[in-house]
Image 1: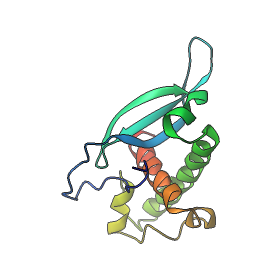
Image 2: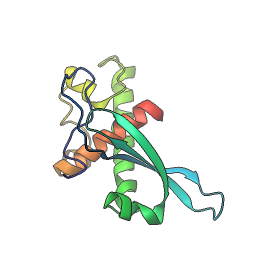
Image 3: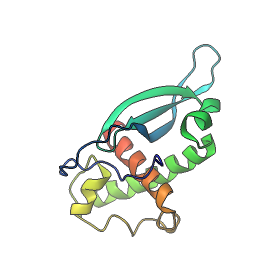
Image 4: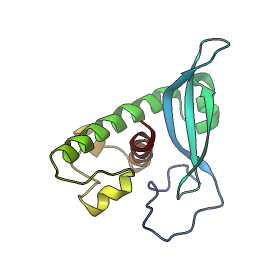
Amino acid sequence: MNPFDYNPPDSRQAAPASDEVYVAAVKPHAAVSPSDRQPLARVRYTNGKTFVGHHLLRHIDLHRETGRPVDYWLAIDRLARQVVSQIDTLVSQRTIRQVVCFSELRYQIDADTGWSPEVDALPTEDWAAVQWRVTDILRTG
């Protein structure tokens, strides 16, 4: 199964969680290794319904764990932060209510379009990765 086959969890859906756990989001700069001062990324895992755990990994180990290089996760993080900034603007303008999960936007706006041209042009798998990272940022910063 591709780790991004699912959209971020929707707390209002009654669909059961999967028994399979896979990578949901990567926070590229979560910490620094105390032993060798290498950057650590926080890799969060999901069962398709909710976040179920996380690990801190050195950047050099990200590709082995996620199947994607650190540059990919840095780009996903940058795009997710753009989307979060746009969400914050919509909330401050009272266009939408505050959300803590990307999927909650679907009840208020068409959440699949209208972001930056770069975000709107993403392939489906990368767009799902951005949505998971947006949810991660909204919940944990």
